[in-house]
Length: 507
Image (cartoon, rainbow, N blue to C red):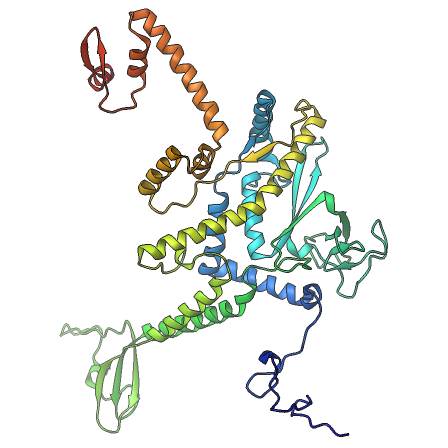
């Protein structure tokens, strides 16, 4: 029995060749694409990933919008925060450990030292997440046992394209793909890290080491459940960014050419007229007569004119509004996949509602990034504390894992109005003290501790002054700490303006 097929070799169906899922229909309106049924690990091979990372790094180094979105999001997510906060009950030990972390380990946590302190390293980690897709951080120690963090760039985690199984070493026989070593349940158990040769010409032999997973953090933001390596944040729009960059380069070249042309002269010869008297005039008359000078700051272009001579100014209309609008459209398309409001870095919308929506979206993006960074930051300081105890720099404590971090202040919409709403919410119980302090970039326990110290200091001073001058302690407290700008107190049935007293005292 013969079967009729279409131009693509698919059997014709009764009623046409339209399928229930129209995307599966093959026709001349859409180009034919191969059907990929494997997982994302195999769909994106080493070449595709390396190409995406290479383009992403180049754009980050040269494109302001690309760089601005990545840098701004992570600046709001990290800022000058991520200082350790002890959450345990042993406050004395926690304060000592916190002081060691901030004063000793934070400035020296990275193997490179110098400007690469803990917070700077965390910011660079966040940048690498978006620019490169993933990275590694190796937990190591120096010769004295001091804990160190060593960053492993994305391109150093790799394996040979044809390699499918580890041939030797501690992971012999286990599957390996793009530098990640898996067990039989597809769980990462190790990473192949290549040395970064200083001179690739002299280092002809590539050396590597297979690092156990517990010794190295491999961080990326997963988008597929079977994903083993991270992708740059703008993978979906790298070609659009490249097109915009090329278009802008050509337009800049066009504008430079246009700027160099000042006048257009049309004459019958199409060039400089050798018999034009102005061309015979000398720039400097040696006989003391009238001196003349020809100004040609801009270039003059000559065109043959069969209908007579003429002189006109050259006017360029490039780049036009259409070019601007089309590039804006491309920017908005690629920014949609970045999880960051474009209005924060490029042409913000004018309406107040649009601005509030953009800031709310930015808040969610910052919170999402912080939720990824907080656990890895905690793991790092727990490693540091464990090493400090082992070195004898800190005494042992059962609560050595009870740590949190300070966070940057939340992005504000209308600071005055928002603070007033937050105070009212706190009064009626719609929010908590912890929530409000966290929104301001602090920790409520630290604030309570500081308030306790200041209250103790206030009462100590007030009690001493009350005894010294025979004045009730509540009056002394009001004089030391005035919460109401128009507050008045009574001393021996006389009304006293505390504002005047304070001013007189300062005078």
